[in-house]
Length: 381
Image 1 (cartoon, rainbow, N blue to C red):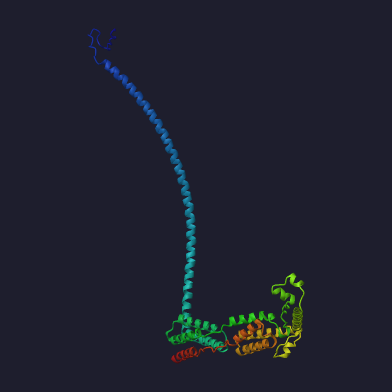
Image 2 (spheres, helix red, strand yellow):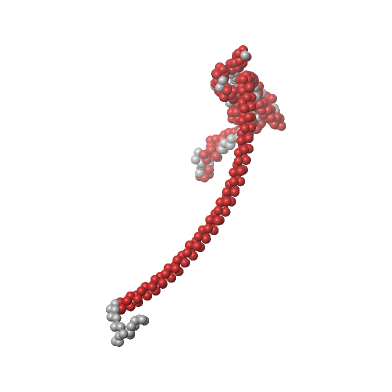
């Protein structure tokens, strides 16, 4: 291998002796080769890093742009909501101002009402006592006329409730008297008008089924007794041989007697169908013409209707009079042996024993207590 040409620096004398050759030259060459590769690798890495950083920056830029746009939209929505809220706030403020004016006006009216109430409260007890006295007088008149005591009881309970709401200690005596009258009215035995009226309605519905004395018919006649042949058949019947045997004189006489008895029995049955002997205490009832039966039933129906009206009006004397007339009408013109007629007569007699007009209690104690309370208040003035 030839040695490399020696390089002589300029200005150096050519005749100078050659310098000694360095011994580290190959190591420098190798170092220079590795340094180039490192430089190229660093350059490639820098380029790759620059590319990655650029793409990343683009993504960040687009995300930031999107978020900025969303923020702008949100800000616009918030501004719209804020405007709406401000409008509602202004509306609420105006309403509050109106309500405050109304409250002030109401407070003024309440003050006027309280003043008016205080002016009327002094006379409220006197007015209440006057109303109670008139109500008690009306209830007492209704009880005296025999009206329903339940209405008077309801009026007294309403008066007691008003006194309880009034809660005036000076009216304690009036409340105690009212409570005693209420207890008496509750213990008053009221007549069962509804059940009595229903019994009369049942009798009215059955009038057409009651037979009249003039229309009574003879019951069906009994079947005629069997003749000699029948009686002989009942005794076991005779055989054909017995019939064929010659009859004796005694047997012929017996058969003739039986036939005569059967004929008399048939004649008696026919006469019973033609004639009937019976005792009638009111002969005119048996002589009533058939076309008059309608008016007899209508008269009885009118008597029972009058009794029902007297019952509902609590007129005991008129009720008893009509029921007694109805009983007499049944006994005079209707068949007493009929079961329906006898049952109707018994029911009417039971109605005669019912009391429909009991002596009602009076409200004198409550009236006296109210009048005493009014007199005491007038004397206190």
